[in-house]
Length: 329
Image (cartoon, rainbow, N blue to C red; front, top):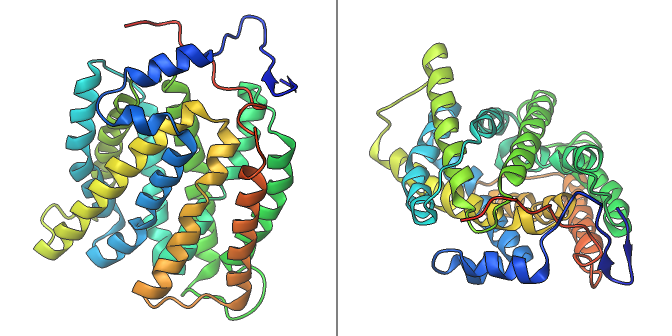
């Protein structure tokens, strides 16, 4: 779908939220969420910053991947459920939880082979998957600036992964790359399903709460089947897992859920690439990880790609928003 002179051109039979309807949906959100939802790019960026500490907290918890997946959901779910209760509506995106369980479990395993920073960057290859699927399935043709940014971001992610050059950080980068690709695929599925399930802009917490519960159940099943689930980690591990659940699973993904229906899929995904950049820096300072010069050059390319995609004025106005739900109440 194209656009003319800064206005969206709408497809017949595919209604979108008008500015008034969007503002009304935002004002119906509980508490301070309305203020944040009015600035969807800021919400996406804040969500990415919350999630940036995920790899750090998980590494410090020193638990198995399945245990980390289970407990981040266990600690984050009560807060999401409280917000969902205020929304007073039930949702059912259980399949999103399956994708998210795969995302987190593959990512936790990848950390063991390439470190928290690089595993996070590899997982964010989802930006390409989201863009292609959103274009093919949802009819969201990305703006030209986003299309220009994608190859820049891709080259940056490849360099950060350590595939190019010598002296790459990680005990087994090749295995880490495979796990990172699996992470990216699962994360793309989660983002797209949650985004499609979040058409009612007044109720962003419900889908995330249900997906989180589904993720915890999947992690518990897999961990039990393979004997890797530890339901009694030590007090220090529980502390870091609680921080992980509250900052990332609750705040991070709630903020991202607020932004997803209000922005084109590819724009949101590229904004979320701020997360791996910050995580790489945090991992260097807090975990002593040492990316190679090639990998650091990749960080610079990722930042450049984000700038290309987000700086141009009126980007959101030229992009078609997500169709509105016909439901009310």
